[in-house]
Length: 219
Image (cartoon, rainbow, N blue to C red; front, side):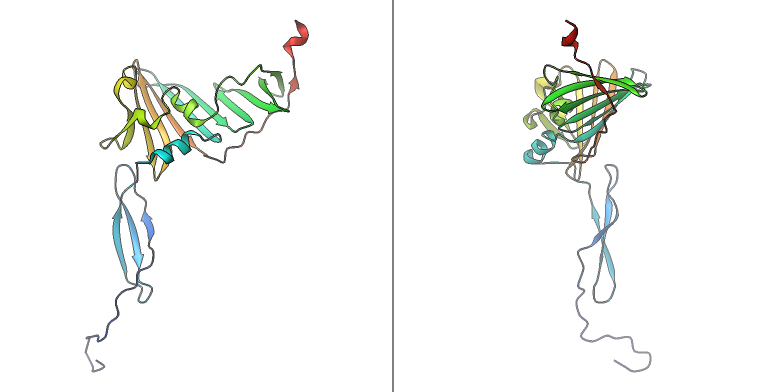
């Protein structure tokens, strides 16, 4: 109506909501908020959203097969004191492991893997008979337990844990957020290790200048 003081609205259209956006991200500890806006009048409404902490076997296998990533491992002693930190950057043609200020590289050069060691501006590389380990995330992160079937989802911890005989020696929990693997927590003999995973598919390794040193020349 158009009369003075009249607030009635006739033929009011239904709201047309957009796809919404996350205005408060969900965390493992608290739900988040998704806000929808009406494209006709600008009104808003909200919905609660939860962090997705489960994955399918196909997602699990895809992450474990990744050959480009960064992991940072922090080791705590039985008293909860940080005792060591190691970072590992991995690509299909080069890796870099850093611990205690020292870096060790491996690099694929013309079909041959080289180990690279040194400090400051002085590094030397030596040919390796074979690459010492698999570079997949599953091999580096989970060792002999990379198979999805060996893990079960713990709804209370919102993480995957080793099940059956596999967990007799140590406790391990693998965490995912929105379908992406983020960290592993493992405990054995009172020591605890927390490994964070990042840069999936985007890690780069910059090699230092090095001289090739072939031990076979001195046999």
